[in-house]
Every structure is written in C-alpha cells, then in structure tokens.
Length: 559
Image 1 (cartoon, rainbow, N blue to C red):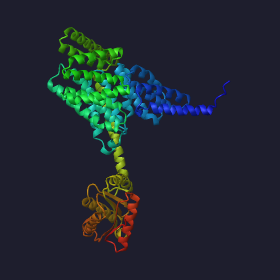
Image 2 (tube, one colour; image 1 turned 90 degrees about the horizontal axis):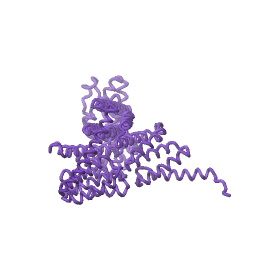
Image 3 (tube, rainbow, N blue to C red; image 1 turned 180 degrees about the vertical axis):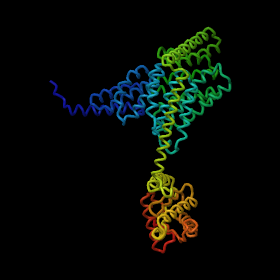
Image 4 (tube, rainbow, N blue to C red; image 1 turned 90 degrees about the vertical axis):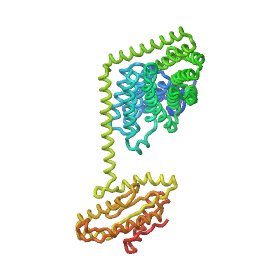
C-alpha cells in the first residue's frame, strides 16, 4: 500500500514544474513552437491548480503566441477567451494588450473580421494617453492588419506610415529607451503590406507604381533588419529577412536576395515555424524563376502545394500557384499553366468574396474604414496631448520658477545621464559651484525685488556665456551649479575665470536701477570619480576656500 504523499512536498514539486514550464513557454526562450505550446498548456494547468492566476494568464497568452507562430489561428481564437478572463489586473496590462494583438492577427488571418476588428479597437482604446513601450504603435499595427486582410492594403500602409512618423517625432531619448520589438514589428508589417500591394500590381500596375511600392518596402525592410540585433528571439529574423529578400528579388538584386531567403527558410525549419517556412518557399520559387530555372521552380511549388494541403495560408497558396503558373508558361506546358492560373483566380475570388461578405456583415464600407481611422487618429492626438502635458509637467518640475534654470532635480537627472556616459567614453567632465558674494546685504538694503532681479540677470548671463550642452542649475538661494561636459579641471577653471571677470565688469545699475558692486566666487572640481555627490562636495570645499581667500576668485577642488 502506497504511503500518502505530503501535500507540502507535492505543492513544492508542482511549483518547480510550473517555473520550468513557464521558462520553456516564454516567447523569447527559443523553444520550438510545438514544444512551447505543450509547455504553455502544462503551465496553464499547473498555475490554475495552484491558484496562481497571474501565471495562468501569462501561460495562456504565451500559448496563443506559439499557436500564431504555427499558423493555428482557429485554435488560438478558442484558447484566447480563457486567458482574457484572467487579465483584468493593472499589472497585467502588457499581457492583455499582447493577447488583443494576437487575437487581431489570428482573426484577420482566419477571416473572422468581427473578432479581429473588435480586438483591434479595444487595443487602440487601451493605449490612449499611454506613451510607454510603443503601445500606440502596436495598436496601429493591429488595426492596419485588419485593413490589409480585408483588402484595403493602401489604408493599412497609410495607417502604419502615420504611426511610425508619430513614433519617430517623439522625444529621442524616450524612444531610444523603449523596447525594440514594437518598432521592429511595425516596420516589418509595413514592408509585408507593401509586398502585398506589389503582388496586386505585378500584372496590372505601371512601372512607376511598382517601383514606388518596392522602394517603400525596401526602406521599411532595411529599417526592420537594422533593429534585429536588439532582439534575442530569432522568430522575427525569419519574417524580416524573408520579406527583405523578396523585395530585393523583385528589385532585380537576385544574387543579394538568395542568402537572405535561405537564412530565413533555414531558421523557419529549425524553429518549427511552418507557416513562415511555406511563405519563404514560395519566394524561393520566384527566385528560381529569376535564375532561369523554371523546371526547378515548378517542382518546388508543386511539392509546396501538396505539403500545405488544406492548411495552406491563402496568400501563400496564391503566390505558390502564381509561381507555378509562370513556370509552366516558361516551359511551354500551357494546359498546366492554365490549371494553375484558374486555381489562382478561384483563390482570389474566394478571398474577395470573403472580404466583401465581411464588409457587408460588419458594415465596413469605405465610410466605416474612415471612421475607424478617425478613431485611431483621435486616440493618437489624445495620446500626443497626454505626452505633451507629461513633458511640460516634467519640465516644470525640473525648473527654477524665478530664473528658468534647472533645479536640484534637473541636476540629478542630467548627471545621471552625463556622468555614466563620460565614464564609459573616458571623457573629462567638470562641475563648478558659483555663489554671489555678499548677496544678503542686497536683499536687506534694497529689498527682495532687487535681489530677484539680480538672480534673473545672473541666469541670463550664464545662458549667454555658457555652451548649449552645459548644465546650468540654481542650487538654492544665490548659489548656482554648472556642469561642464568635455572639460578637465584646468580648462574648466579658465572658463570660470572668464565668467568671474564678466560678472565683476557687469553694469548692474542699468539692470537693477541701483548702484551695485557684485562679484562671484567659484569652486571647481573634475571627474574622476564620476559621482555627483563627490563632485559637489569637492566643488563646495573649493568655493569655501574662495570665500575665505577674499571672495571674487576661482579655486580648484582637490582630486
């Protein structure tokens, strides 16, 4: 008879198994999608049994991620509602948005446009006022996918171009600090959408139209490729290289396209990304045609069509059969060419009917599409307004209201950027503390209004006599701090000496209406160490020596 198991040990074992399954199911873990699906299912079951609802929700989202990578769209749409029920917590907002994105993509691919559009619009609404992590860019991408799959590729391109433009015109430091993935997905989507337009134009468009679309696709594809080093997950490399290789092929760069297409296909096979692999195989068939190998192109496409069978993604099926049609025509096999051409026509008609039926059922006419874009535009403008208000609030919080110079918070924020950068590059950096000599008697004798006028004039003189990249701060009362990137101790001392002379020679009567004889004392310190507190302390000690030495002088801090 088996002894009863200790419940505590059972729970501990299940927790350990849960963590292992979550690690394997994480999208960036590098696990093959089929294995990751099983790990996500097991993690979801264990998390539910252990009442760890956040882990259960994440496992559900990751399950959907891998189902999308495998092209199992219907299965994804069945799995999504269970995960969605667990994603109400504010700390799971990122996961909720990702699930909405996945449902949008799967619904669009499966032709279930009511689900796809509803998820896309909810995703757009969830990003209003949020300037973090490229959320608005991801939402625009999801909506663009809906438009593209419903047959309005040009609307999708306009939406993506506007979203990328808005993202690029934001504060550069903030954009640089955000995750790379939203920007990479948007640029790759723009490339893929332009390729879709290209295939529509190949037999009917003018040379100028085709060339313009190819240039758009090439720019987007190159931008996406430049972002790949920032992502550890090779899945995106498959899509980006495959798209860029196809663009280069149609631009006539046949030899340059080959290594990109082969690497993309090799990675797709290695990672078990079946749908991606099929798509690149179709592009390889077009590449074989360009290399004057129609027999090999036809053989490759016929094998691909059989392999895909009933699971063939519609767009890939159309492209494979179109390559087969062109190969048969080149080989003089006119009956086979006609059969493939008719198959393409049937597929295109079926897709067009599905798009028209979806538009009819959902009232997605041109007006409705424009309304959806208007809603996205309103969300974009509102988000921009929130960003501007947030930027203004940050600026106010870091500014001295009297002089307009930075305050202590501004000093800390700027030095948090400048000091590590200077240390990494080995560049010099100096910090100076400046104090107005005998300022208290000015306030006592002439009043605080005159004292405030003096402080404002000091700030103006500092702006006029310092470089754009220098940090100017009112540190409190009549004391100011200057941060001088790129200057060592001696060079900074020379700058401060010229500044001291400028203040001593200034015509204060013309400014204040009062005969004042004002001077400043300055203490200078230089890195290393690249630590704000140490530099402030050394500059402060040097400033006191300047005061004790008779004022109106510059003293250097000890190293």
